Amino acid sequence: MTTKMSFGDTVVMWQKKYGRHDLPWQNTQDPYAVWLSEIMLQQTQVATVREYFARFMARFPTVADLAAAHQDEVLGLWSGLGYYSRARNLHRAALDVVALHSGVFPRNSEALQTLPGIGRSTAAAVASLCFGEPIAILDGNVKRVLTRYLGFKEDLASSRVEKNLWAIAQTMLPLRDVKQAMPRYTQGVMDLGATVCTPKKPQCAQCPVVDTCVAKAEGQPEAYPVKTRKLKRTSEQLWLLQAVTRQGHVWLMKRPQTGVWAGLYCLPVFESFDALLATLPVKYHTQLQDGGVFKHVLTHKDLHLHPVELTLPSTVKLGAAMGEGQWMAEADWPSLGLPAPIRKLLAC
Image 1 (cartoon, rainbow, N blue to C red):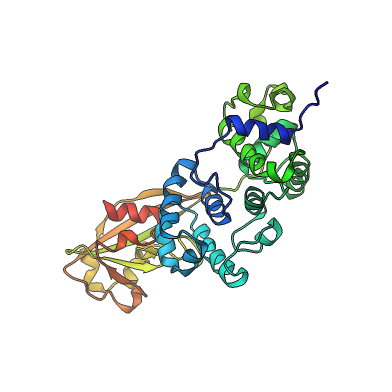
Image 2 (spheres, rainbow, N blue to C red):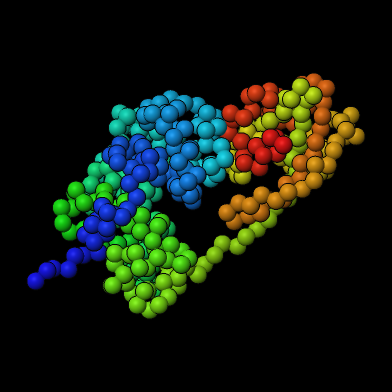
């Protein structure tokens, strides 16, 4: 009589044959590479991350190299990937690994969570993939796999409910050769969510646990996971001073470390056209050109951006009221950390 394999052991066997094996951050137990990929993959598609991961590893092959870099360079390489707090935390975490851990990543999930920007699931991913720690992850893909498999109908908008799912996830790990199996299990449950148990039209026929999946038996896998609370979308109007010279220089300012586009270089930002006028010398008012308006969509906010163009003969001083800024040559600004809409605007 054969013994039926557990959920975890089944996922391990499936991953060996059908999981993803060609991602550039796979087939390594280097916690630096795994951590970098996990941070980049938050809210970002694999296809997008591939290019950024390769660039970061080429420029910063070790955590010490990343720690030694200036934050501006890190943000510059990250530019276009979005969610820039990830890049700032990435740099701070590298500094902590070097300063507090002698350049060596902590080897367990609890210690990893003390580093900036590393939450419970990311810490578990690094610890299980690199060190074989028997610890469950619970990112978006895994929540979908587990809630469908279990028929978990409780509302994940509740922190109490999510805590319950964490506890259940911990019971679903592989039972055989656990330390050796954990890297493959963690990768496998992520692969299932990414390639088979997708948000829309899941490929149930290809799932290794379809015979015991509650959502499949119910005939409504897309009803999971249950999460009712949604953040209300807001919108904001912002005016941008696009001051350029005939030689191609552009006036850029570094944003504060908090708020929208924190820490990035940017065109001067104003809450109204009148506010823009108030900080610009009067002699330039008649030279301003309306650049139209375009929308930039953030996770929970729509930004309606109004570029106002000003072309000057040379790199003149724009006045003390404009704040701390500088003229950047056409060859220099592309390497800076710039918000995606500003980069697009300057490239036109």
